[in-house]
Length: 164
Image (tube, rainbow, N blue to C red; front, side, top):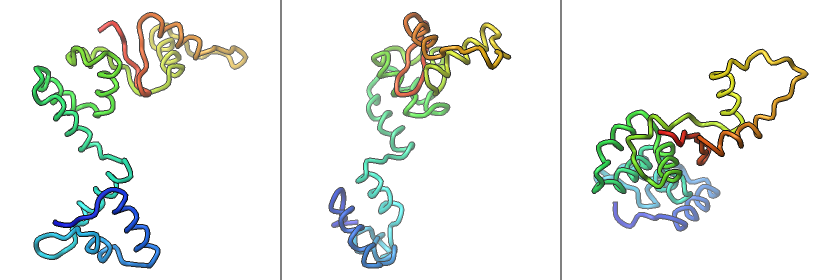
């Protein structure tokens, strides 16, 4: 695939040609996404569009993370984690704790939710706070803020225990 359009040039061309009613096959070919046998390279074409729009696939995000850690002593741990968790979850852990000790990820990770949702789940799971009558109001956000001060942290919508 030579002379393939990328970035804003690709998005502009796709926009213009789509408005003109060009078929997806012709659009793919005209943007330079052609396989060796002359057929359209649709996968590469659509991945380039997603990339130009700033959208990456989960597989690409995992590959990017592995590339960042290729020389790290924690590469094997990262590979194991990526079998069960998304790159976003792991990257949030790294951002939250500065990339220290990926071994602690499993013990630390609490899930994807808001702080208030976590506070409610925590109270229900640990203290049996269920069947609260409708007239009782619990400020789960304030409860989260109390939990956050001591043992938990939120990063990009993911909750982590700080005591791993």
